[in-house]
Amino acid sequence: MRCFVQAKKSYHLKKRNDDKMQQHPQQQIKVELGDTEAEGIYSNMCMIMHSPTEIVLDYARVMPRSQKARVLARIIMTPMHAKMMLQTLDDNLKKFEKQFGEIKIHRGKEKSSNPIGFESDHSGNNEENK
Image (cartoon, rainbow, N blue to C red; front, top):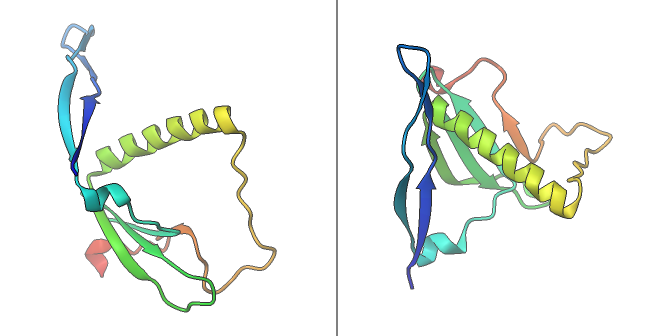
């Protein structure tokens, strides 16, 4: 079974030379969602790396009492698309919390040397340096 989703490409306002904003028309995109992709992949860990031209998200799953995780999916996008995704995710989380209540983030009292969760590479290392 294949599922088709009609997605509207969001429009962007573009400044013209005369400082007036110009609206670009919306485009409809037919998105195909196959059976395997429709099942989804559960991830409770995401490692984020970046270079000047790319943002890389490695999604993994860590099980309790396990000392290792395997990357299940790698998503590579431009910084612009990553920022657009961040804004869209923020908007959707606000809508979710409005409907279902605040999402609480539970943090343990002790910091683990092997954290499980979503983390970013703040060390200055990026994909080009590896």
